[in-house]
Length: 256
Image (spheres, rainbow, N blue to C red):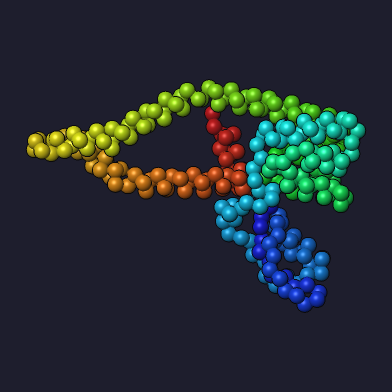
């Protein structure tokens, strides 16, 4: 969902400016007009993924999602209704998920389907999880559906741990090699270049290019680091948006 800044007028003549989450501007306008508001202005916030920090926009880790589903499964198997199960989970601990679960509880209490309440937070809950909840509602066996999703999460987390363990040693080697090359370029090469300059000897073209590159790198290293930091942060926020997720997942599927 996107964030829209709206200037609306109420039936009593009061004009206010508020922000709303909505799938599209047309649906938001229709919803506001059905509630009796007059929409004077409606704009989508630009580059909102860089500043997007509200409820339902904080990424939840797979371990926290796994723990929530394990608790929910135990409570549902014990015969508790969904609202009471959510109340128990909310009372048992904190975490980033609690704020969202509290909103989901209110939606379910207001008559919304359990899966529809989760569907309002696509950045938090994967599409597969929401689809699993929908399937459990249709079959009338929600605990069994959650049990299968827990098994899927455990397999995924185990596979992820194996990949991280396999890449840990190569990552250390690459990091050490990168630091060694950086030290050579910033400190060792300038020392030798000064020695050659004092001797007046003619240097080969590749050596001259290396010395020139070293000087350029030494003067603009902080600029490169700042650009890398800003670019990494920009990419990290962008890939959490709907467009970013589709693009990144598409690249993953095409990677050998």
